Length: 227
Image (cartoon, rainbow, N blue to C red; front, side, top):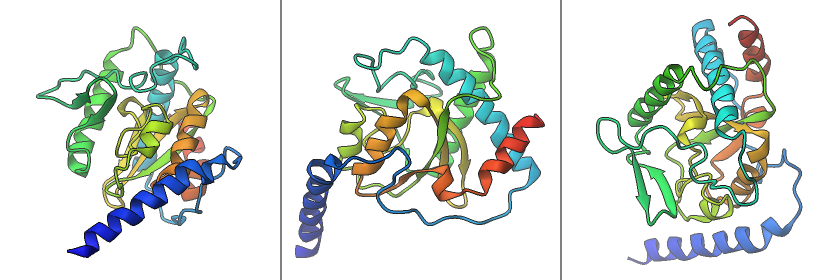
């Protein structure tokens, strides 16, 4: 009976430490609290082509959505959550307009469905944007099923990541269903809030691609040139 209580108390104390003490230090943008374990693996040409194609779509779409975004007063919760809230049922759940997150987001298969919805919407919205070969920003990596849902990352990022530390749907690029990794795009303007989220989360489930899988970056750049 005491074990869950002790774990909860330790988690709360650690969150308070990370949020109120550790984050006061000044970190460079490339800093992640603990260096994530790097991945070394072989990507197929087909997977790289899908990744590169989605990346170009996301760069163009997020550029369109955030072109006139007000950094000081803009709604970080919804800027990249424009995919319809209902698609064969409710996708998003909104609580008092303060917290927005995906239902059943811990299910990788369900997340794959959400991503397919977002991809379909991007492809259909050709009147407003076009895929981009390059843009200023960084690719982030989110570890699925690895969240304490303490709310610290959601709060410090002004709702940009949700209570599960999950990035907004319109930034999703690719999901690795085997390793349970979600790759997402972070336009330059939003790098600071994502870094803040990475700095305070107890789960440490947000990191940058160059830290998690550095060998993938040149492969992606080459794939973009050939798509």
